[in-house]
Image (cartoon, rainbow, N blue to C red; front, side, top):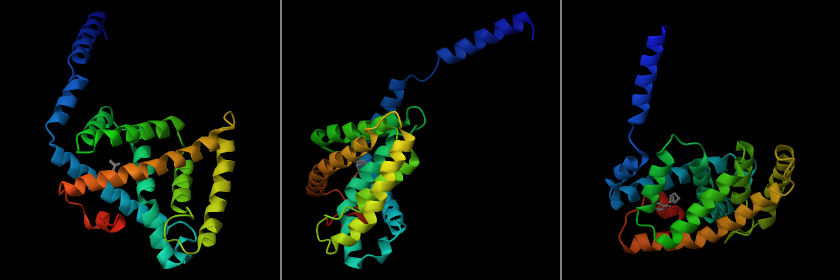
Length: 226
Ligand SMILES: Nc1ccc(C(=O)O[C@H]2C[C@H]3CC[C@@H]2C3)cc1
């Protein structure tokens, strides 16, 4: 192409890049969503997360051989933690530009009390900083579900026998994936401790939504006894 064509191209591209919808306009777009609509979005997210959790759990080797009542106790006992772990991974994975900000805004404007919003996004951030590979995410979620000391679990040994090989495998994987970071495995397990604190906030969140007569889906009512 000729020199003047190159100059013309430069002018056109500069003009094109200069005039874009600024980020804060997408934030204004978010403002068009009502609290109610944002709550319905979260209900959809939570419901599909729980559906995914149940299907994932059924595919954990040995899970379906556990006592049936213990299977239910493990699912109900780990649903909140597994859901937050998975939504943290989804949230921290590279979403298209601006989607993360919009989703964050909509979570913030969904009727969740401020005291829960902070620990929730702190957790999302701390999971994001780990840059877990898919295998680590899957194993950590399986380990969370196979926590022997959930309420109402009768045969805890049987659950330990399933969880232990997963923990050993994750430990080995961490050494291979993060050789320069010997304490990486410990950091991952530290996330599980942080997760347990979210259970308390989540229960409060459900209660506050219930008293304000927000409707849940049958699956969420069943898994969280609401
Ligand atoms: N009716 C409900 C709506 C949303 C939830 C929930 O746990 O939401 C979770 C999904 C992600 C966004 C907020 C948390 C993490 C529970 C009951």
